[in-house]
Figure 1 (cartoon, helix red, strand yellow):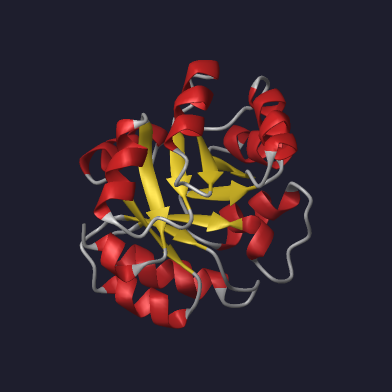
Figure 2: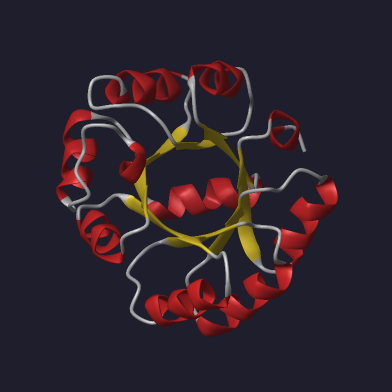
Length: 189
């Protein structure tokens, strides 16, 4: 799957299912949404998890930082590309995102914004970011999403702590391309 195909899916259904365990995976397999962030697994199980999702025609983006047995080096993307059918990766490391993107994987650069210092670091980092999408957590900060969109052409995904339709709509109305959530009820919105 190429980058434009992933964006097309996100535009047509901007709710990304984030799965963090086998129970979430089973719920996800029953859902019509197509884009999935995989936030768990290890080097033995991630190929199996991805295969299950791909059999249901899901677009699969694996959080390489959360896969047990992978180091934090950019070679994690090489493993994911070589041993799974994943369409992309999520990482908190800008150099890993850049490397994965060069390999042809869809890349999500994830930021946690806990305080003003973290927000300032994010603003500096996105100046040179080489990724397809920026994910900002928590996603319940529409004003910060708007501010980030003024600073970059990279699409933004809002993730974390989004539980209501109002929060989904606030994120999307703040120019986020999509939201990611592990909340089953949000998947149905």
